Image 1: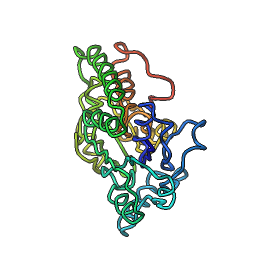
Image 2 (image 1 turned 30 degrees about the horizontal axis):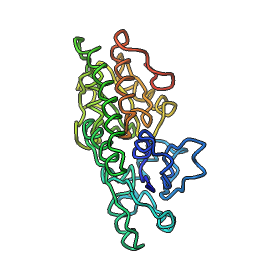
Image 3 (image 1 turned 90 degrees about the vertical axis):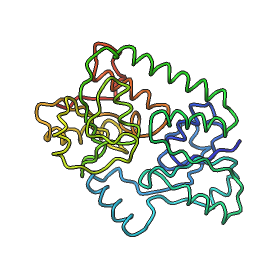
Image 4 (image 1 turned 45 degrees about the vertical axis):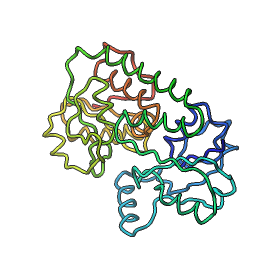
Length: 294
């Protein structure tokens, strides 16, 4: 089956299911093994924000949305040339990826007859269900079930290790300028790791909040997980966040690798967060995943 992924988390799922060889189209943000890059066509482009500060990125996004403009561009001709059979997309977040409605309109215009699967999880359980959905749509349901069973076994191991321990109060800062508290599945990750998420929005969209609201929640640990950043970028932002929480441990997290992309690596995120909250109960996280800054 010829697969096209229009979001990085779907690309992660495809590779976890052993279908990387069937993937013909990706976005400019998808992480693809170096050996495979030559065989993947980029069908979604967007603004390269790597040189921008969080405040500049926020201003850019707000200006584009206010003008009714898209943040991502679908290269329709390139998509048509791939003759895809299954396209993986989303409607979860206009800031994170191209909405599925744009894809459907393009397919109608081009006369393509690909199946379109929209992945829109809001909780950790729904993320795991989306893996099963991709497996079903791609014709590998048994692989998907085995993958999800393995992920649930790892979650159960963390739960067993931290279940009898006190649960520290954890605030999660998903964006720093302006501050956004975490929503969607991120509170589930904290809870699965043996923490008590505070000032978060479980199963709902993340929202902008004042620093005072986050401080009023009296967190015992603050995690900084800026969407779109790996650990090196998160560390610099976490140092600025620490100024708002004197005396409270503040940790930077590899957000794109562990927390904000709804794919199999969220379980890596649970394990890493558990190591932050309960370092004497679970193995230390791999290097390059978390770092304490205060």
